[in-house]
Length: 358
Image 1: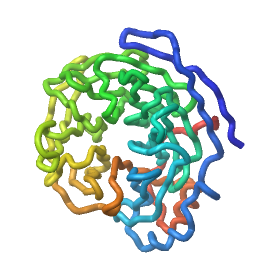
Image 2 (image 1 turned 120 degrees about the vertical axis):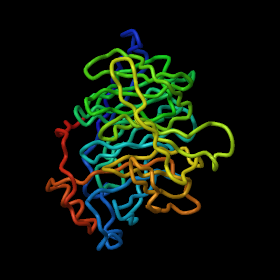
Image 3 (image 1 turned 45 degrees about the vertical axis):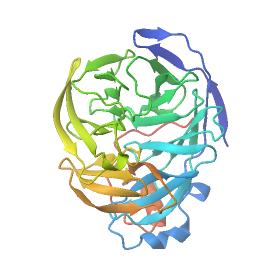
Image 4 (image 1 turned 30 degrees about the vertical axis):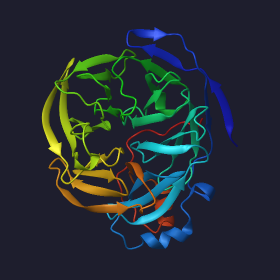
């Protein structure tokens, strides 16, 4: 049974707390894994025999949802959809849950965050965002389970939302150096970072604090796609420049170390044969980078940047916006879900704690 809870978000500025102004309506239901939320049995046979780790790649595409592929084999095993709105960006947490950000088709009303269990094709929980024109990027903190989302308010100003444990009402942060179009990212210590639009700055929300801080860096990333922790450094994905034919502009990943209020560029990875024909963000995992490019997803060796192969194709009529890796689980429920897909199930165990029901 679905319950609707009206909550008021906590709002912060770069200098501290200011008054809350908007309502958030969160609703949650039973977890997916059977019934409408489970992968249809008719798709299971298509995955049998694939060299899968139990991990899955979710990719948002043109329309009302996206496609699901096995990883690392790239076999198409199904499609997911959202009840309302148009999905664009997405991210995942350490338990394998996937968060899909969607804007209302009409351009009015709140943006929506849909949460999918690993292997599911329909969401089991929904959060409304107090921003009418869509959430742009998200990231999950593997230490706390907090979900960070970049949004634009009714005036087009960028804001950063943080949902504690991906539940309830968000804390709202405002500041001058937030790029609403870029994916935020947590490092291994739980510090949250987002790029700026036109400044040589990063914005940081240090772990355990409620005050944004600016971090200086000797570079600008006006069209950055996002920030991720690559296992050693912060990795900022962005086109090499913003002028010229997008098909001639390569994608660079700038690896950065941060100390206090200063960020230092360690190296720059050029993704071989990449171009700016897609605005979608990639996903870094265990020495590989999944990079969307218009109608397909390429697999790159990371941090070398060498393009290995076309991981998957979405079809000429489907444009890929973003990708994320949904990790497998050794839990009994996760094993049962993967068995229904016809997949072997020996993925990484979940590291985050169990989430309380809304």
